[in-house]
Length: 79
Picture 1 (cartoon, one colour):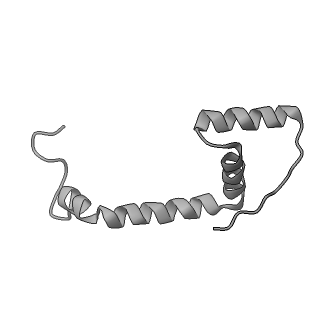
Picture 2 (cartoon, one colour):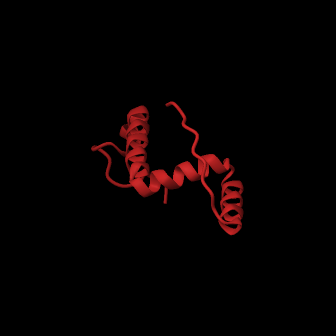
């Protein structure tokens, strides 16, 4: 995806908070702001569902083996 530069002005408190939050999450301030915008526009929920669907597709056979329709409850010996 192509990136576009966006310059914004915020007060020092907001800038400090953005830097601290980004650092705590192990990401750049740019990525942090981008994630906030995605959350606000609902894109994150859609992205999560797509990622979850891809995960299930990749591990379908593992889930079927562990939790298949022929299984009722946990395996013997597990609690």
